[in-house]
Amino acid sequence: MARRVAVIGAGVSGLSSIKCCLDEGLEPICFERSNYVSPQESSEDGMNRIYRSLVTNTCKEMSCYSDFPFQEDYPNFMNQEKFWNYLQEFAEHFDLLKYIRFRTTVCSITKRPDFSETGQWDVVTETEGKQERAVFDAVMVCTGHYLNPRLPLESFPGIHKFKGQILHSQEYRGPEGFQGKRVLVIGLGNTAGDVAVELSRTAAQVLLSTRTGAWVLCRSSDGGYPFNMVITRRCINFIAQVLPSCVLNRIQERQLNKRFNHENYGLSITKGKKSKFVVNDELPTCILCGTITMKTSVKEFTETSALFEDGTVGENIDIVIFATGYTFSFPFFEEPFKSLCTKKIFLYKRVFPSNLERATLAVIGFIGLKGSILAATELQARWATRVFKGLCQIPPSQKLMAEATKKEQLIKRGVMKDTSEDKLEFILYLDDIAACIGAKPSVPSLFLKDPRLAWEVFFGPCTPYQYRLVGPGKWDGARNAILTQWDRTLKPLKTRTVPNSTKPASMSHYLKVWGAPILLASLLLICKSSLFFKSVRDNLQNRISPYLISIW
Image 1 (tube, rainbow, N blue to C red):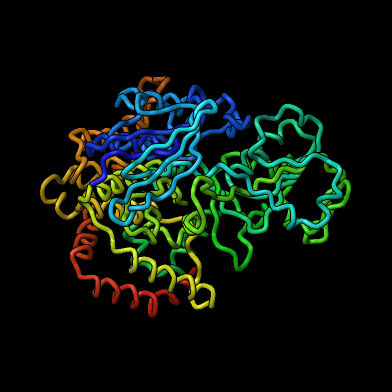
Image 2 (cartoon, rainbow, N blue to C red):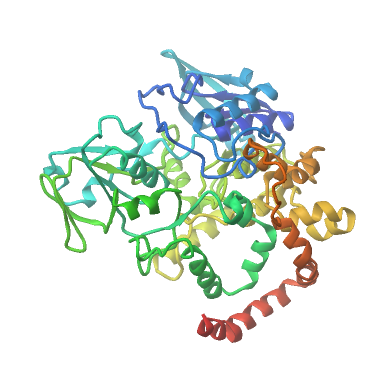
């Protein structure tokens, strides 16, 4: 059984991994290459990776540690300083800082000669020029996504002729130095949208180039509630599993175009491309006001301009910012293990490398998710530490490698699509990992034991507290955290009291009126077998969907 665990990185994933180790009686030692003083301070490579105007895309109730809610007066979406304060509070509350060795770089992680029997690892670290070697029973890699910027210059003919400035969005800090400039931002992710919007206030013109387009989400939904809390619900997830995908896509398209028509704004998804979502409250307004101009993908660069695929030309461009994401690497591993770990298809449930005889290494946070990464990484860490202790089992490496290799071959032959880089469904993935450790809540059981709580679990937002209701790691405060989550959501908004103001009907009011029949139908379906579930879905798809589509 593993006892001594090396945790690589002291970020969001690293902190939860340290705590999970302690919860399971393991001995963590965390190696963090920065000094962990402030996100504003440069890292050891001289590069601060956070632009100052960054605001979280997921609200506080959906992106907190499952047994440590945000303080009620924290804003629902917060800047980096507020979020950093929360991480500090978490680390201090659970006394995690003493397990972290700051300014320490991990040089190599290799199997010990007797790995097949012991599962142990040799870890070489360097602190202030001095190297040290130590043996660990297990390793948790928590280095995150944003280490190596992807700058695909070879995909842009003529870029080397361009005489202006070329940046990656990782280098962007703020709008200083962009006054009066003509800027081209390439890419349409969350970062590209944020950078383009901020620069539109100071630059002479901002062009935003995208190959795919994107659906633009606002942080607030109908009624002003955080959109994450409105759409991330078990009842909605259940309906999504029943309805045919063509019907769901049609409903989604109609709903997202209610605020503004994406095609009119040059944001609609290119035919044949996968749906993509970005969170940005101001991008449509900037396009409407002309401070941002949407463009197709760049075909070619000249010394001062960019030729786009639609034949238009962006003249006199001063600066090009590539918001083209990051490449993933594990520089401390040896080949071929290094390359295998970068292929998500070879990571069992996105956590355990398939080729290890002993499951004593876990990759935490190497995941794309339609929701808070924090909630997922915490569950990954809870599961990994229980696997290390031998309390949870995973299939043997021979079986995992055979399945992954077969899938890889089918993808290469075009028999099946490669979905390894797609973002996973939030509730489905968290439920999957929680089931591995026995922490997935049973909705039917809850309705029998605690109807009020069950109502919030099924019809309310799927907040991380739900995974502390049962099983290992059960938290006594989980029930109260769920029942008071809307209080913490509304608290920072109610800074001005209006006497005798009329109170509009809340969402809970409508649920009380219409929820009973929906609940009854849902429970009946939940209790049915998976065979019946499949039959219902097939019948809907084959018989009902053509009729619905013809109506819409």
